[in-house]
Image (cartoon, rainbow over all chains, first blue to last red; front, side):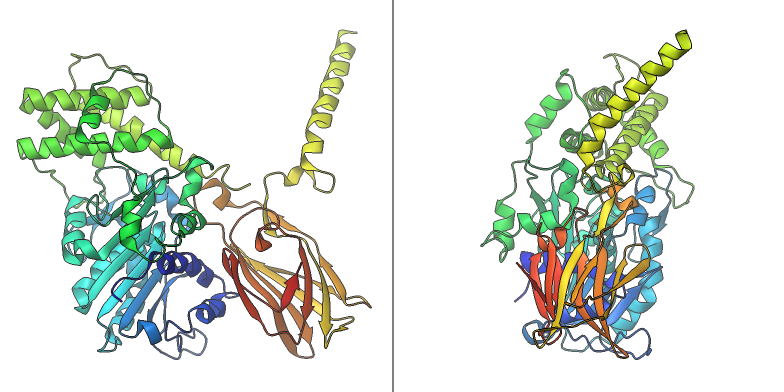
Length: 386
Length: 162
């Protein structure tokens, strides 16, 4: 057994929510008593054991060593929280340098820092026979699992595997690339539904770990529910509960809906058709932004200059970056112009072809797209419960 | 005169509004409860031990979302007990975040509490605890606690239902 199955992982990402309430903490141990060593972790007696609660303002997750079938395996599971959403959609949220290098969202960084002492305890008590550690999380718990996996890989010397469901983006490109490389492409399973709004934030240039390749496990949302309901763990479990794919990641990979090929992104950018911003169209815009950005970087060799200051605003940097690309060459500036025109159209601003695209225009379009996407994400929850 | 006509029109409109909307929310619920999440669906139950009714037993129900709350009842001479629904507004309904309410029902026997129901409610709808079925429970204190995984979270209980 190398990888956890899709079914086991999705169940764990859902069950970990039980540890927040003292009413259910012992039940969580009961569910997993045949899989994990659940001795210890008793917060009242202060006894130490293999089972570790990862604590921030409240209990955020657990770290445990496997037994029976999972002998030789370590586990970290982290839950999401409703209190992190403001930070996710706040463009002025600062960035922090992560331990392994690269800039990450400061909200995730501070939560990670708060349970780091518990995580260190777990690492220092890892039995020698543990060869693989599995990190699992849903939603904001997925972001924390990503940081934890990257940290464990650097500090533990073990193979580390990362499984996330509906995770937001955690850091900028340098962090995302580094984490991908350190963990290894075959050790990451990032599962997300196409209309799940949470993986759409924080908006670009935050990047996913990974943004493509075998670990990028896109699932179709279906049309039965409010698109945002596909963020719920119950719907991830449902999407992975087919009698075969619940055992096999390769079959989950095969469920991937077709992605727009380069040509269709180009024609989306070239089109003058009307456009509105919804959860079903936002991802196409995101693909287009990524495509243009990659073109800019490849052709012009411009690096995104980033300062570590916490007062740094991403939008200014981006605007300056794209402006540079616009000035650079005709071919490039064409795609940058088209991108700004199309993004403008999504939020109801008309920009005529031939308009002199200034930093101020780019910045204002980005700012308004950012606001619109944030509103979409915040509003998405309404109607899924009630 | 004009004012009076205006008042009449207002009354008619208000009445029409109330007649239109009240039936939507049913008879037992207050109009103010519309849109509130079910933290605990209404419970009816029968408590037995050795298949005989347990009478006048104190039963404590607890639930926790952002904070831990509880209420109490007692069984009657036939071992029957009921708890009303618990409905609250929660921020989670406004966000694409997980809905999680920890639930517990415990029977007080001497100095001891025996937990007969421990669950996480993972959907804000009525009766989501049992996948839409009423929480009409038969609980024997001698029953082994069983784990059910059919309704989302793991439910541990000594009770059965139809």
